[in-house]
Amino acid sequence: MKLFFKYCKEIWKENKALVSLIYFFTLLLACVEISLPLLFKLFIDKIREGIGGGSFAIYLLLYICCLLAGNILNVFWYQLLDKAGGIILLRVRNKLFKSIINAPFQRISNTGREKIKNILFNDTMSVFSSLTLFGIRIFSNLLMLALFLIFVSILNPSLGGLLLLMAGAGFLISLLARKTIKKNSQNVNAELKKTNALTNSFIDSIELFKTNDLKGYIEEKHKKMLKNFIKLARKNDFTQVFLKNILANINMVFTLLALSLVIVLGKNTSTGDLLFLFFISNMIFSFSTQTEQLISAFYANLPAFEHIEEILQLDKKDTEEKTFKWESLQSLSFENFSFDYNLYNDKKPASTQKPDPLLNNLNMTFYPGDRVRVCGKNGSGKTALLKLLAGLLETSSGSILINGKNIKEYSSQFKKNKILYISQDEFILNETIEKYFEVMKTGLTAEEISAFLQAWDFSETKNDEDLLNFILEDNAKNISGGMRKKLLALKLFARAKKADIILIDEIEAGMDIQTIKRYRSERNRLLGNSQEKIVFEITHTKDEDDFFTRLLKIEAGTAF
Image 1 (cartoon, one colour):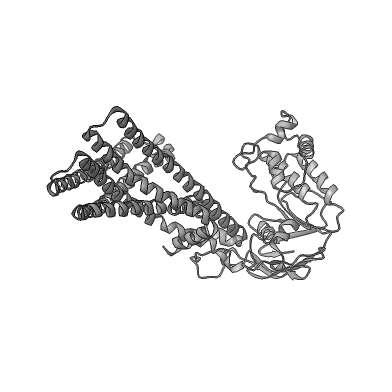
Image 2 (image 1 turned 90 degrees about the vertical axis):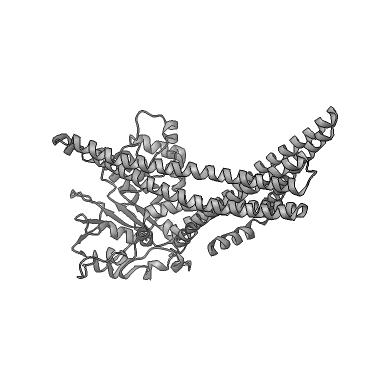
């Protein structure tokens, strides 16, 4: 609850005009809701007194206009809530994006990508609902209940007391009914999941069923589970319908009591008075049950605030923004440098024996003009080394130094521009090809992109315009792996011009022989004579490549 009020306070500070307008319209809606039964009473009383056709039309038109005004206000109110919700979603997700980008990569990994995905979607939507739909509607319903009860109590204190009791009963009964329905629904869902698990296991083990006489087994197992599911579903439906009808019946009983009280206390009670009371009692009972449901939904969403706050805390240990930059690259050094994935793993290893670091006590220096071929067995630490240089992982001990200064001391934004990392599994954004290279800040014109792709046979069946507007979908899974590598090669060549440290992770994997030749030729042309850059490239190929000036072999935690 504390976090909810914190968010409310922040939103109020940033959007006072919009929040004030929402509450103003909430008050207007409450006034319209009260005026509707009053106008209805007036209309009926005038008919009973006997009025002409002209007056009848005027009163009817007045009532219709009031209904229309309430409808327009309600629509506009919801539009204001949507606008506020959009601001809240944008604000919360932007803060999450910033925290995730700035947080150490290993903290993101330890938190879990699926958990973060769930928070970015489900929990942010829950916060949106709590701050707008639930929070404002709870306030609106409570305001209307208070105004109705005050108004009726002024007219008739006894009737006001009865309606207050009616509102409390509606709230309590709704609370008890909701808990029962929720419990039964959970039981039904649990049984449904068991049935789903059985059908899934049947498909997963289809070879077993095809090679063994198990038809009777699966049919009997399914019949038993389905029987339990239907039994619970019938019980749940019975309870849900019964309690729903009980709520409606209690509403009618309270309405009957209220009408009886008015008739007993006021001998000259008009038809308009009775209909007015009928409206009021139904609205009070309805608002009280709705309010309970809204409050329950609101409390169910409160953990979302804590989940979001957890992600926002990921980068709090690194709040100090670094400002150092290097004018020109002079050296890149590993100083007593070690790295161990287990250091960042929250789960303790089953064995008490301390595992050996993936990279252990490395000491070496590289200089501009070095073009380093990184090789080693799978799992030896090649990719980890590049990720450490890219800032995706942190050293377990020792330091990585650039120009004699710890790499952590340099501006993160500066490093993004000066350290270029091309991963073999790099995610390709879901954009058109032209937009992708624009977002990647390659500085390429449409003509340059098109010329490269045509020269590299990206697609012989598409013209230039089709190529540029081709939409990459689902991490570019709608193109082949070789085509993906061509896109990454173009990104590499375009971005390498401004980078000082270039990290390439097996870009040749998935390329055909002709493309590898083109890649090496272009790489050699752009980087082969550079004396300002340091290039690291992981490769499993053992053929000669005179591009490289140094060989870095990683084996058993050491590099040589």
